Length: 207
Image (tube, rainbow, N blue to C red; front, side):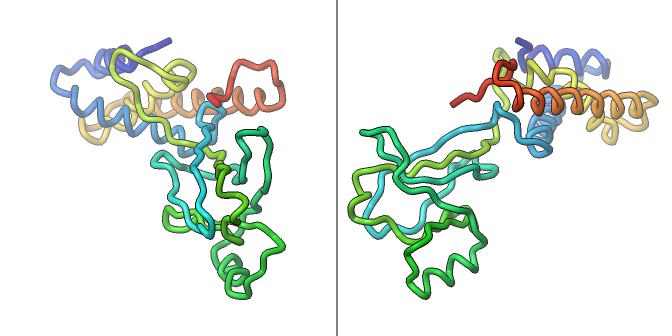
Protein backbone atom coordinates (compact mmCIF):
# COMPACT_ATOMS: atom_id res chain seq x y z
CA UNK A 1 0.00 0.00 0.00
CA UNK A 2 1.28 3.46 -0.88
CA UNK A 3 1.81 5.69 2.13
CA UNK A 4 1.11 9.39 2.42
CA UNK A 5 4.83 10.04 2.80
CA UNK A 6 5.59 8.21 -0.45
CA UNK A 7 2.98 10.24 -2.33
CA UNK A 8 4.37 13.50 -0.93
CA UNK A 9 7.87 12.47 -2.02
CA UNK A 10 6.70 11.72 -5.56
CA UNK A 11 4.98 15.12 -5.79
CA UNK A 12 8.12 16.85 -4.51
CA UNK A 13 10.21 15.02 -7.15
CA UNK A 14 7.88 16.20 -9.91
CA UNK A 15 8.02 19.81 -8.68
CA UNK A 16 11.78 19.66 -8.04
CA UNK A 17 11.52 22.11 -5.16
CA UNK A 18 12.79 21.98 -1.57
CA UNK A 19 10.57 24.76 -0.15
CA UNK A 20 7.11 23.25 -0.58
CA UNK A 21 6.65 20.56 2.09
CA UNK A 22 3.90 22.41 3.97
CA UNK A 23 2.10 23.34 0.77
CA UNK A 24 2.28 19.79 -0.60
CA UNK A 25 0.72 18.49 2.62
CA UNK A 26 -2.13 21.00 2.28
CA UNK A 27 -2.72 20.25 -1.42
CA UNK A 28 -2.69 16.52 -0.76
CA UNK A 29 -5.35 16.91 1.96
CA UNK A 30 -7.43 18.87 -0.54
CA UNK A 31 -7.02 16.17 -3.19
CA UNK A 32 -7.94 13.47 -0.67
CA UNK A 33 -11.14 15.35 0.23
CA UNK A 34 -11.86 16.19 -3.42
CA UNK A 35 -12.06 12.56 -4.53
CA UNK A 36 -14.48 11.79 -1.69
CA UNK A 37 -16.73 14.74 -2.57
CA UNK A 38 -17.06 13.58 -6.17
CA UNK A 39 -18.20 9.99 -5.54
CA UNK A 40 -19.39 7.79 -2.67
CA UNK A 41 -17.01 4.82 -2.45
CA UNK A 42 -17.56 1.56 -0.59
CA UNK A 43 -14.50 2.49 1.45
CA UNK A 44 -16.39 5.50 2.82
CA UNK A 45 -19.33 3.49 4.18
CA UNK A 46 -19.63 3.49 7.95
CA UNK A 47 -22.20 3.01 10.72
CA UNK A 48 -22.90 5.04 13.86
CA UNK A 49 -25.16 4.02 16.70
CA UNK A 50 -26.39 5.56 19.92
CA UNK A 51 -28.47 4.58 22.94
CA UNK A 52 -32.03 5.87 23.02
CA UNK A 53 -34.15 7.92 25.43
CA UNK A 54 -37.97 7.93 25.42
CA UNK A 55 -39.45 10.88 23.49
CA UNK A 56 -36.07 11.75 21.98
CA UNK A 57 -36.50 13.23 18.48
CA UNK A 58 -33.13 14.81 17.58
CA UNK A 59 -29.64 13.36 17.20
CA UNK A 60 -26.30 14.89 16.22
CA UNK A 61 -24.71 13.68 12.98
CA UNK A 62 -21.26 12.02 13.26
CA UNK A 63 -18.28 14.33 12.84
CA UNK A 64 -17.19 12.59 9.61
CA UNK A 65 -20.72 12.57 8.14
CA UNK A 66 -21.16 13.10 4.39
CA UNK A 67 -24.48 11.54 3.31
CA UNK A 68 -27.03 9.22 4.94
CA UNK A 69 -27.77 5.75 3.61
CA UNK A 70 -30.30 4.38 6.11
CA UNK A 71 -31.63 5.15 9.59
CA UNK A 72 -33.30 2.56 11.80
CA UNK A 73 -34.01 1.44 15.36
CA UNK A 74 -32.01 -1.72 15.97
CA UNK A 75 -32.35 -4.42 18.60
CA UNK A 76 -28.75 -5.47 19.45
CA UNK A 77 -29.95 -8.34 21.62
CA UNK A 78 -32.02 -10.03 18.91
CA UNK A 79 -29.97 -8.60 16.02
CA UNK A 80 -32.77 -7.24 13.87
CA UNK A 81 -34.30 -3.93 12.75
CA UNK A 82 -37.33 -2.86 14.78
CA UNK A 83 -38.24 0.32 12.91
CA UNK A 84 -36.92 1.81 9.67
CA UNK A 85 -37.16 5.52 8.80
CA UNK A 86 -37.82 6.99 5.37
CA UNK A 87 -35.90 10.14 4.43
CA UNK A 88 -37.83 13.40 3.95
CA UNK A 89 -37.12 17.11 3.73
CA UNK A 90 -37.40 19.02 6.98
CA UNK A 91 -40.70 20.78 6.17
CA UNK A 92 -42.77 17.60 5.59
CA UNK A 93 -41.29 16.18 8.80
CA UNK A 94 -42.30 19.26 10.78
CA UNK A 95 -45.79 19.06 9.31
CA UNK A 96 -46.09 15.43 10.41
CA UNK A 97 -44.93 16.43 13.89
CA UNK A 98 -47.32 19.38 14.08
CA UNK A 99 -50.29 17.15 13.30
CA UNK A 100 -48.92 14.46 15.67
CA UNK A 101 -49.02 11.76 13.01
CA UNK A 102 -47.33 8.56 14.12
CA UNK A 103 -48.24 6.02 11.47
CA UNK A 104 -45.16 6.64 9.26
CA UNK A 105 -41.57 6.89 10.53
CA UNK A 106 -39.50 9.54 8.75
CA UNK A 107 -36.26 11.47 9.32
CA UNK A 108 -34.52 14.54 7.99
CA UNK A 109 -30.94 15.81 8.22
CA UNK A 110 -30.96 19.52 9.01
CA UNK A 111 -28.05 21.71 10.14
CA UNK A 112 -25.97 18.72 11.33
CA UNK A 113 -28.96 17.38 13.25
CA UNK A 114 -31.01 14.27 12.49
CA UNK A 115 -34.67 14.86 13.30
CA UNK A 116 -37.11 11.95 13.47
CA UNK A 117 -40.86 11.56 13.70
CA UNK A 118 -42.42 10.00 15.62
CA UNK A 119 -40.03 10.28 18.55
CA UNK A 120 -38.49 7.30 20.32
CA UNK A 121 -41.14 5.19 22.04
CA UNK A 122 -40.78 3.96 25.60
CA UNK A 123 -40.42 0.35 24.50
CA UNK A 124 -37.49 1.38 22.23
CA UNK A 125 -35.43 2.94 25.03
CA UNK A 126 -33.32 -0.21 25.54
CA UNK A 127 -32.44 -0.37 21.83
CA UNK A 128 -30.12 1.58 19.49
CA UNK A 129 -30.57 4.12 16.74
CA UNK A 130 -28.25 3.16 13.88
CA UNK A 131 -27.19 5.33 10.97
CA UNK A 132 -25.58 3.81 7.89
CA UNK A 133 -23.79 6.65 6.12
CA UNK A 134 -20.95 7.77 3.88
CA UNK A 135 -18.10 9.17 5.97
CA UNK A 136 -15.24 11.44 4.98
CA UNK A 137 -11.95 9.62 5.63
CA UNK A 138 -9.10 11.66 7.08
CA UNK A 139 -5.73 11.65 5.35
CA UNK A 140 -3.52 9.17 7.27
CA UNK A 141 -0.15 9.94 8.83
CA UNK A 142 2.95 9.99 6.63
CA UNK A 143 3.88 6.39 7.46
CA UNK A 144 0.38 5.04 6.78
CA UNK A 145 -2.09 4.73 3.93
CA UNK A 146 -5.70 3.90 3.19
CA UNK A 147 -7.97 2.88 0.30
CA UNK A 148 -7.39 6.15 -1.57
CA UNK A 149 -3.60 6.23 -1.22
CA UNK A 150 -3.51 2.63 -2.46
CA UNK A 151 -6.18 2.43 -5.16
CA UNK A 152 -6.15 6.14 -6.05
CA UNK A 153 -2.46 6.89 -5.68
CA UNK A 154 -2.11 8.30 -9.22
CA UNK A 155 -5.15 10.55 -8.78
CA UNK A 156 -3.78 11.99 -5.53
CA UNK A 157 -0.39 12.64 -7.13
CA UNK A 158 -1.71 14.37 -10.25
CA UNK A 159 -4.46 16.28 -8.45
CA UNK A 160 -1.91 17.57 -5.93
CA UNK A 161 0.39 18.64 -8.77
CA UNK A 162 -2.52 20.32 -10.55
CA UNK A 163 -3.38 22.31 -7.41
CA UNK A 164 0.24 23.43 -7.05
CA UNK A 165 0.33 25.23 -10.42
CA UNK A 166 -1.33 28.53 -9.40
CA UNK A 167 1.21 28.99 -6.59
CA UNK A 168 4.38 28.22 -8.53
CA UNK A 169 3.52 30.06 -11.72
CA UNK A 170 2.69 28.71 -15.16
CA UNK A 171 3.86 25.16 -15.68
CA UNK A 172 3.76 23.59 -19.11
CA UNK A 173 2.87 20.28 -17.44
CA UNK A 174 -0.41 21.57 -15.96
CA UNK A 175 -2.57 20.32 -18.85
CA UNK A 176 -0.94 16.89 -18.62
CA UNK A 177 -1.44 16.71 -14.85
CA UNK A 178 -5.11 17.72 -15.13
CA UNK A 179 -5.67 15.14 -17.88
CA UNK A 180 -3.98 12.35 -15.93
CA UNK A 181 -5.96 13.25 -12.77
CA UNK A 182 -9.21 12.97 -14.75
CA UNK A 183 -8.24 9.59 -16.21
CA UNK A 184 -7.19 8.28 -12.80
CA UNK A 185 -10.42 9.47 -11.20
CA UNK A 186 -12.57 7.80 -13.86
CA UNK A 187 -10.69 4.52 -13.52
CA UNK A 188 -11.14 4.42 -9.76
CA UNK A 189 -14.80 5.47 -9.94
CA UNK A 190 -15.58 2.85 -12.58
CA UNK A 191 -13.86 0.14 -10.53
CA UNK A 192 -16.02 1.06 -7.54
CA UNK A 193 -19.22 1.03 -9.60
CA UNK A 194 -18.32 -2.36 -11.07
CA UNK A 195 -17.67 -3.77 -7.59
CA UNK A 196 -21.22 -2.83 -6.54
CA UNK A 197 -22.54 -5.32 -9.09
CA UNK A 198 -19.91 -7.95 -8.34
CA UNK A 199 -19.97 -9.17 -4.69
CA UNK A 200 -16.64 -10.91 -5.29
CA UNK A 201 -14.99 -7.65 -6.35
CA UNK A 202 -11.91 -6.13 -4.68
CA UNK A 203 -13.64 -3.28 -2.80
CA UNK A 204 -14.90 -4.20 0.64
CA UNK A 205 -17.02 -2.10 2.97
CA UNK A 206 -15.18 -1.21 6.18
CA UNK A 207 -18.31 -2.14 8.19
